[in-house]
Image (cartoon, rainbow, N blue to C red; front, side):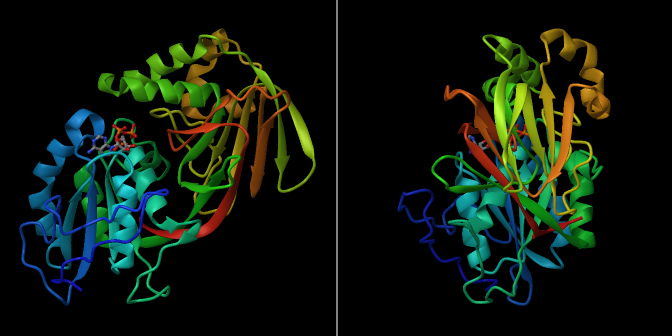
Length: 352
Ligand SMILES: Nc1ncnc2c1ncn2[C@@H]1O[C@H](COP(=O)(O)OP(=O)(O)OP(=O)(O)O)[C@@H](O)[C@H]1O
């Protein structure tokens, strides 16, 4: 498939029916190098607007190095996203076309969209010609504002390091979280899904990305306005409903970090087949001042008003319905409660 143009996609995002054309000028196949049928396609999904445009600038500098390190072993397909959710469509199309790897170049938001592109209507996307036995590997070149997912693996926030990791070619299977709301439609997360104050803070932080990592502080301060710790009910592994009193935030980790470096679910491991739930209860604003360092180093889980649990699935709902409890997944606003999360063990292969 190496030299043939990628076919237009008949996958649509949501209920739209617009075709995606990867042969457009946004996509450069074998960016700047020679294309070969015998080589495999590595599709780089680049968000040029990530980290206030830094991703696009860094990408231009990185491309010659990628050609040098990966050019001999693969066709380098560069695909720039044109806006939110475009990375989902590009990824689906690339997998259908039998790409060997799809590499997210950007922040956690771009990674989240690429991960969602591995699925369609709740099921894994497969290659049209190579069938379900062929698996496309996920890669990451972390170039975002927070780049929290990379921290779990201890990866340096260095794009050259990331290219070396891809060149080495070591792969392992990791779990993916599934989240659904009242409509039942499935979305996927790779890092952390969270509920209430932290999700509200994330929602506001996304409006202040122009301030870099400071956006998380501004988002948190804004989220405190009008915040109350509410009673929520949870159902773990399809058991009985249990009430959790005065919940400040409920976090469900497939990986450990969120919010630009907070080690919120420190026991999470993306390859252990579980989601790690951490519930902060009855936190006051001054608890965040006094315990902030603990949230960053993960020691908050030994505090008395922090509850932790390892689960395969969890449903979360309000005790008294208000409809305004924020939910986010991988730092992206998802909606409001109710929500259900479950784990898909070893769902995606990733360059490690
Ligand atoms: N061309 C584009 N123009 C504007 N927004 C885009 C474009 N392409 C993608 N996006 C959106 O930008 C959002 C943020 O991008 P990304 O995650 O790469 O960077 P970031 O927010 O700076 O980093 P982080 O998520 O690690 O904090 C994505 O969720 C995506 O929907």
